[in-house]
Length: 415
Image (cartoon, rainbow, N blue to C red):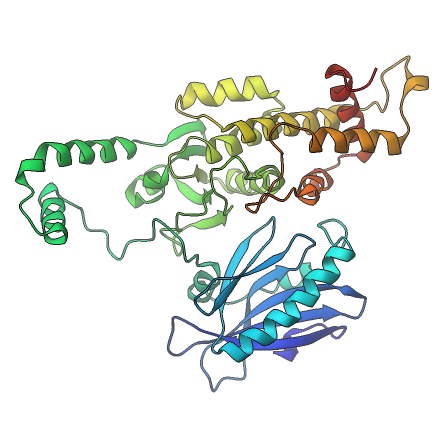
């Protein structure tokens, strides 16, 4: 494993993890660098068997300021940040205790040093570029324990009779008196399996049913799938290029920091000549908001135009209230990007100092009725919002602040 590290990096701890394979061996290692002792990352290493000296990298997970570690109660633990959630289970309680102590120290140092994207851990890119484990190993690193829908073992068609038989076997009595109700529920399910909505020639917006329909995906020339759910698995990981945004459809979910990466992913599909399916569970809120954000940036449309355009092609979309606020924030960021002025003409003397503008911007974020960035524990995560701003391509920080200043004026927060 040491051979996989750069000369200036150090392995602080290595623990063996459980694996679904009886042959492959997995290790989780904690790595720090001599250049900055406050920065750490996790690497997942895959060995083809216990006798092999050769390993490949299957996971790279930076430890940011907002990274948190949770005990799962079954001998495992999960690590979460604004970007992702990963679940691990060590081969023994002793090794879990060792890794938890090390992780606790890493998280504390990252928090004190304010390690956020754009302000540290640039060296993690080296390891991202060297992820070489095969798809079976990557699937295990990407696996989620609380998925509601998982990839199917076969492509067999389900008939009504098989549904009745399965229900009768599960419940233990004759289901004929409930046939009408069961038929109705089957029809509702079939209705949910409607075709995905074509937003652009290369972009489809749909549900988990569309993501599970292999024949339909091939018919639509889909080569890329953007899965904007926490609860739905990637059904065909060997057949399509996936990107996952593992989030729930809740008022506390922060989608905005992911829209830079989702924009790049969709454009990669467009440039490849293949189509991309963007889906959540029903194709209404999470995926709808993400497609609207993409249309705003790609077409340079304001929010109202992009929303109307997407809704015309998929009438059921309805971003939740928090996502709408994030789309409004994103609209302001995009407008700031296109604005070449730092101060309105003729008002240069009235422009606030940079520090004052930053303060106003932070006030706007903190005093929204529904926070733009809140994690599942209810703690405000200002870092993730600032991350999304810093990642905007060619965005000048002064322009972003100027846009927030304009918003503050219109809302009457400043004269």
